Length: 460
Image (cartoon, rainbow, N blue to C red; front, side, top):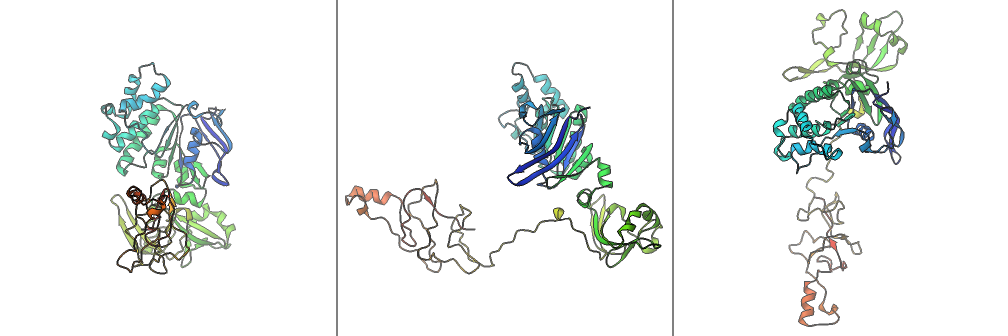
């Protein structure tokens, strides 16, 4: 049996940088596959290559067993649903759903099929409404209806629920599962939300930095991750990862040295992990799922349990569960891709002078912007004028440098003399000269030329 979708070592390259690297993946007919991973891992790029919206740099794509690298997107029999609602605002729900059907066959009456799709999505009462008259969840249902009304062979969904609130996401997640099961269409779903992935997918493919990490059923993915990244990414609350050293001398019970204390493994765990003995003295990462930890006094420890001491630091009450933060004195293993990035830091010193009266119009600061060395200063003689050419005409009176902030008034304004108009001194020539834009800076009297100018921006 041929696969509905098959990727053979597919890569996507932008210059020398790889967004996707040698992904090999197959999707069976009628299967619901979820591409899961953090932002920027390449999952949406894979989806766009399947749809034909991105060219494949290396590798081969097969649809229904046939090569599809050079097949046009409209000839792939694929429907795609995006994160944004992608509805025509000037069309009603009925017209939006019928639009792809009219493109395919303009002469046929598509109203029965539109009503059937609306009945499946429970949006029959919205058929005569415009997108602006609907909520976010209703618009997302209409977008889904427009995609499935074509009855495609492959259905692609690119984070369709990420712009909705948590309650609506949970409701529509169940609706998507029901609709896809009813249609029986091959579906590839992209998300960064593991709750969506674990609840919707027949299989889940985890990606990291453009590389496929693991493809498994949700239960196997959770219980048997292939590496630390998958173990840390799957599961809420996140798995506890501790750095340790194997202590397994011959004739002695095995243990894991966690720094300040040693975790002795009971007999059942020792039997299951005999491979640890050959790792004697080597560093390892110990993973403890939160639901596998029981808080109790040491005297109440059971024979099949490993005991780890600690101090309760914080308790989070969340209604259906309580999260307890315990300090065991062990060193936590870090997964860089999952750690929070540093917040942006304002490098300007406290109290540094600012120029709020100048509007920022360009990312390039003027030479008189405030710096860490002190307050703004006027440009030195011979410094380039900070004006930039643009499509906005320069105002009649303007600056190419800042006035001295310590003075109460601005420098005197200078302008072009009327004698520049062919030596004429008549009233008409003088009027024309005064009406033209100034060509000299009010601050330094420097000639900044003529033409289209604008003021450089200053950091706010």
